Structures are given as C-alpha cells and as structure tokens.
Image: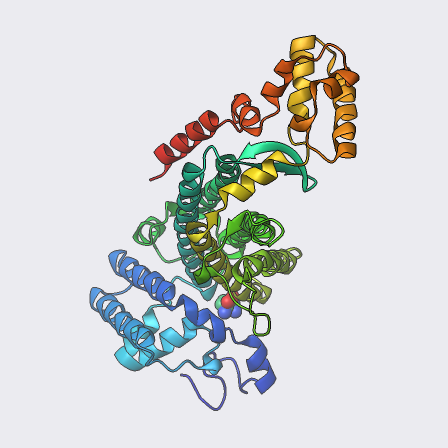
Length: 463
Ligand code: ARG
C-alpha cells in the first residue's frame, strides 16, 4: 500500500507527499532514535500479548518478536539507516521490520497507536534516567560521607551572608549537602513510584475494541499497573515534568555546592585543593589552576531548569488528548538528563579527589569574631544577663577588639570588664573555636559527636 510517490506512511489517504519543510518540522527521528531499545521492548511485549489474547497468531507474533531483535541489533551495531520521511523511531522500526519479515509486520500495530506507543517508550526512557540519577546521587552521597568522616571535627567558619558567623565543623558542612542530595534521592524515588504505570493499550485515546490484556504488557515492561484512563495515559507528560523539576532542584543543590568549591579553592580562601584531574590550567597564566568542572556544574542548572520551563510551557494549554506539540518533550528531557548525569558524576569525582586544608579552615574559623555568640551565651548562662543585654555587651567587646586589631580571645580581662564588670577569667573557656563547636550538642548541631551520629545514620541507611 505504501506508494513512494504519495506518502510513505499514510499513502491511502494522501495523494501528495509532504513538502520538504513539512517533513523537517514534523520529523523527530533525529533525536527520538535514542528510544529505539524502549520502542522495541514495548513492541515485543505488545506482540506477545496480541498472541496470548488470540488477536494475532503465535507464528506472526514470533516472527515479529524475532524480527524486532534483528532491528535492534542493526541499530545498536550502527547499521540502521534512519529515514526522516518515516518521521520517528516508531515508524522507522516498523518499516524496517516489514522489510525483514514481510506481511506479519503489518499486524504489530493492532490495538495500539503511536500515541500510547510514544508515551510508553518515553516513560521507559525516563524511568531509566531516574534509576541512573538514583545511582549517581548515592555515589555522590558516599563521597560526601567520606569527606565528612575524615574531617568530622575539623573547625571552619560557618557563614551567613558569606560573613563569618559561628565556627562549624567540616564534617557538618559536608553533611548539609548529604541532607540535600538525600532529599533529591527521595524525590527521584517518589517520581519513579508515581510514574510507573503503563500507557500501552490506551491506543489513540479511547482504548481499543480488541480484547487486549493491559496487565500483561504492563508487567512485561516492569510497570506496576496499567494507567487507569486512556485519555490521561496518552496525554500525560507530568512524569517528564516531575523528572525535570526533580532534576532542577538537584541541579540547584549541585550549583550551590559548586559555587562553594569555586570560592573555597581560591587563593583568598584556600579551604580546599581540587585535584589536577578535576582542574584545568590557563593558556597564558602559568600559575593558574581553575575549577572549571565546578563552574560548569554551577552553570548546568541553567539548561536543566530551562528544559523544565520549556516543557511546562509546551504542556500548559494543550487540550486532551494527544497533540503534536508533545513531540517537543523529548529533546528537553534528553538534554537535561545527559547534563544532570554528567554534573552528578563530575561532582562525585571532584568531592572524592579534593583535599580540605585543615590549617586554613582552622585559621579562618578563629578569625572574624566567630565566637561572639559564645561570649554572649556565656554572659546569659553565667552572669544571668538577658540575651539582649548580653548581645549589647558583646557588641561593645567586638568593637573594642576591632579597634585594637585583635580577636576576642586576645582581649585582656580588664578589657572584658570594661564592658561588664562581673566578667571573670572563665569567659576565655568559651572563646576557643574547638570549645565553641563542641558545645553545639543540640540535635543536628555542629558538635563532632552530633556529626558522627548523622554520618552513622546515613551509612546505615544506604544500600
Ligand atoms: N513522533 C511522535 C511524538 O514524538 C509520535 C506520536 C505521533 N502521534 C501522532 N498522532 N502523530 O510525539
């Protein structure tokens, strides 16, 4: 029936072939060939089900299933020639199947449409990406745990507004990212559980009159169940949106951490040394070692979030059920997925390789009046001052130290008493950074004992 002079795919209805521009705007084969393996799995499951329900013969199903494996091996071996005239991966595979097995190939599309087919393929593809993100996040969390464990009690400045706030521990800072990436991991798992319903058998939009078994194809493809509404099944792309929004939040976390690594590896901070393996040099300045991987990770959020916004906009006004607009879903998701996986892997490598400079961290921890809050707390605890008064007295002492060009522990007792006469020698016990972090024993606080407890909890919870 396919007449090459009219239209290769629907020659029956169409007298003329498409304009070249029509073909160019219509075709998705340039990118949806990435779903070849998913398309072939879906078709093999569909063919087996059609035979099991008596819709097609066992011998036709067998020929289809075998022929599809041949097509897959041609594609995987780079021997397949993709045709733009055949629009997309679904038509390319089916056309090649016809060349290989002949007439039975025409029976494969019984009780199905490209609408449920593409939704199935794309879901299988996105599900693989969720699994890859799961593995990538676990690897990154493990790298962070190793850093946290090594420096659970190393002191460093904690910042608010990027101004020295209070001393914290290196392990505590690493574990903050473990919590963030841990939530990303749970979002990935939630998304996977929610999306794992099979669209296959929804057909074009209304279901089919053939006695198909949707449970059978769902389970063959690893779905938990068939999607319950055929209109929804072919027009749902929120699984892709959820992947993109989950990826966007994760990319924000990666970007924040990347920003810290850029700052920390500068000559002004020297908190960390990045490995040569994850740095680059400058073509003109011989002294330079640049944190390019961190910078690129910081930037990846732009395209990942861009993909999320783009697909949200594509979907926002679409009436039910399928519209061709939805073909624009794939490139966004492919690009975002590729870049998320790359960013996760690069961050993991950087974290594994980097060394924290314990001395620089400690020196910075002790400067900038980082224990001013400890002093105020001491005034409350020992002298019984209201916190607001203690804040005022401490502020006066910080100003005094600033004038003298020294830090709080360097002030004499006489200096201290000029701000409040009841201050005693005991105050110095709280001004050291080690004492400061050790005192932060509240649950989730920065004290090394608390940090180690969180490290243990995380290690026990990972697979
Ligand atoms: N290439 C199409 C896509 O990616 C496949 C579905 C086409 N369905 C249709 N009714 N034209 O969305």
